[in-house]
Length: 73
Image (cartoon, rainbow, N blue to C red; front, side, top):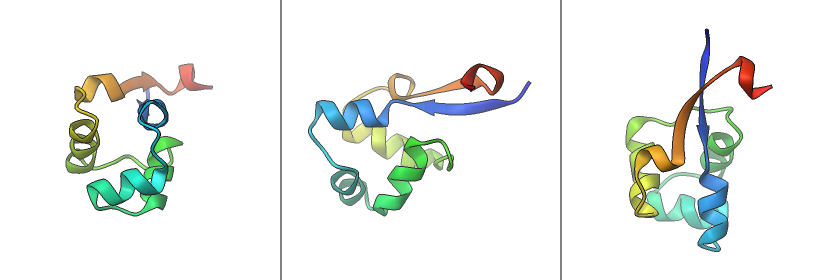
């Protein structure tokens, strides 16, 4: 069974009133990187994922999780 990495980045950004650009600048990546991670087209490196969690002072598992590919449809 295939897995994908789900995320709640957009939820955390909304709660903190941040744009994709704001988050990107804060962690040192491009806005497009944040965008493609949010929609699931790009799986972030461990470092980027941990930087995102650290930026929001959240646990990694609160923002990212594994889910079955079949259940994401």
